[in-house]
Image: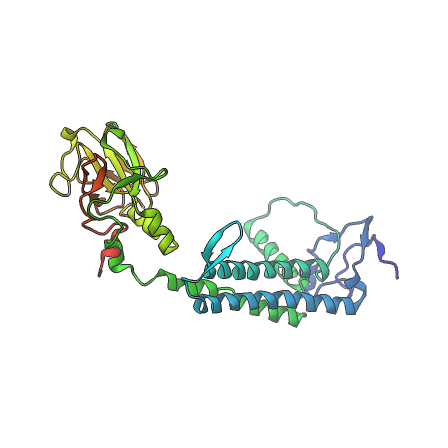
Length: 355
Ligand code: FES
């Protein structure tokens, strides 16, 4: 048998070998095979054994997807979060994250490979033409779409190829599991955790990028600096994560002392320099858009606006709570230090409930 043939016939819904198993009415609406186009048969078109082998390969890919989904779920519970591994290019990182990311990625990949292999090896492979038609009334368009869907479902062979159908259903049924188990990461609420930050009495304030101590004269009136506690790198290394960096980030802003309308404690500024948490009290975005003239700080996420000259009160947007202020002063060498830790929880307001 030659593996090349010329299709010069039109679509014949009465031909058992050519017509998909749909009603005649639907079949007559099918596109017709392109005339005069050389067509090459695939091995799976002519050899039933090859077709069966391809079917098993597709099922194996879907099976591999199921396996990696199960590995994801088991790893989520079996690998302690604190376990670290060294990965080249990344360095020391969480073993759980690596395994979860890899297994989930492979689960998606194998579903994709299986579907492509199925389409390339087993689904009908005929060059078709379909004339463009005028736009029809909505009813007919809908009917055509429905017919096309039925034809597609029939052509895909999902009805006849039970092995593929079952393995695909199995893979798809397991696929939502990672999303379900990851819901566990939504809780428990941090409760007291957001009441604690690295800030404490006499801790130097350093710049976020260079970690240099800051003197008041380093901040001209109208300027804003992102800052951290001086021990942030040690804490990061000890804890192996960036949690404390996220919680302890602050902004230093200098304004004229006479512009300050109110503060969260008596004289919590130093010569007009005020320090506020950098974490928005709405849902926790980092903030750094400062308008010097009005002393307003704008959160880029949902436009909450805080007045830094007036205790960090929200004056616009969804944030319902003021930005926590950090009381500051200078040490005997003239470097800025914290006078104490934050006196209220930093971050989104809703965590405070029931804490
Ligand atoms: S997180 Fe800042 S306004 Fe929503």
